[in-house]
Image (tube, rainbow, N blue to C red; front, side, top):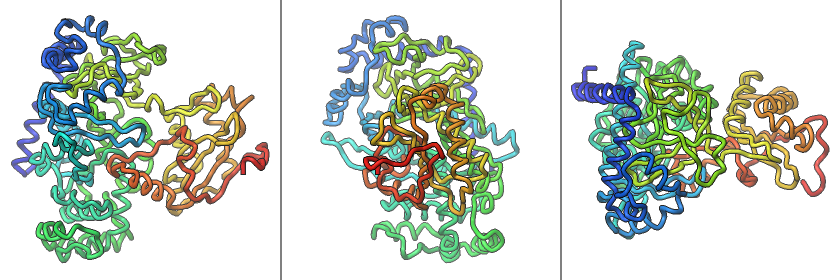
Length: 567
């Protein structure tokens, strides 16, 4: 690592990693100390006074006296924060408000202070320490990364507080760190048009052979970056050669000269890339950055479905989860590449776990991190410097082991992420495992998929909505649908029971090519930022895919014909 600034970053992140590892050896004391300090820091806020934080002096008292509250209970406090009131939910000045995407539910406002952001930054630095160690063990180098997230604010509240996506707040508060870690300049993330922003960010990283990785919130977004590289590769080579920006890019007039001033003609790199294009017919990350490359994206949940397509673009390059987090806080830190288990983030929150038999209880009995069991699933509660206490984010995690005394957890699905024709409760985890297995069995790749329920029947049937990847063909769709039915029954016993009596046969709906591009455009038009966009792999919303063009509907031989009411 020749860059002295990156060397300094390496030393700093190694320090945070080792300090964190030490804390995993003393789980209970670290968590108790975190909670009690948090309560003292927040006891004089309006929220802290309303819930008697000054009278809570132990973990047991906190769990007894502080109720588990939904987001709606925090909304009146957050509205006052947005109007400019101080010391309402957080004791420190609120400098940014995250507006969540709403792609999996109602949009929420999450206040951020310099203090709360500093706490979360520790987890990010710790994760960087882990990935640098992991790469070093594999003989790979850490270096600058390609990022395409928008850095545009969305607006300002009545109280003068900027708001927007979580990633924008993080980047703007840590802009100096951004300049050290990323291959494309901060200005490349300012175009409002998504295609223009991706093109320009990739262009800068592509011109630098020493770019070491790509980072995005979700694996689906990494694949989209690969698609842009493939689609616009020839034009990017020309821009690299001449030090220009393609004239067709829809850029703000004041931004184009700024970006062009940052470009330097690089004929040598252009010649190298043109050779790759002539030899392989396209540009892929593994061909244009052949040395020491890794990918950072969310792991767990539906990620494996997308990871199946990674080898064609990345070969065997390692995939790192970084941190498991949401707008409300950071839950765990990944200790290595190519692993789904992540260590509970002891320094960013006080954590409790709701066991499955308590999920439908209004005020459930919770477990502490030392009490959870390997193989069991839980909903996770967070108390943190973000101003939320015993907050149920709605994420279901599975404990897969322990790192010293700290649980290793894997995100499985959102607690509401399920569908039922009767009472079978098919989860996103069920759906992803089945469809991932079917891709392998039938030797076919999907662009994406989503399970929905029919709208005019009771009990409803399962609709398997699939867009095939470009160039793919499903040779025996009836056999595919039959195997879907069998495999879902094997994964979900309750589906198997109900399918034998009540649930009608499923149907396969093959969507026209480009359907998910159309869906992406519709979601962006609804106000969901493309860097936070994630598609559910099952949904109770029976109109979610209603406007997408259908290529073919496939039925099993025992499926009755559509009635007049169903047409």
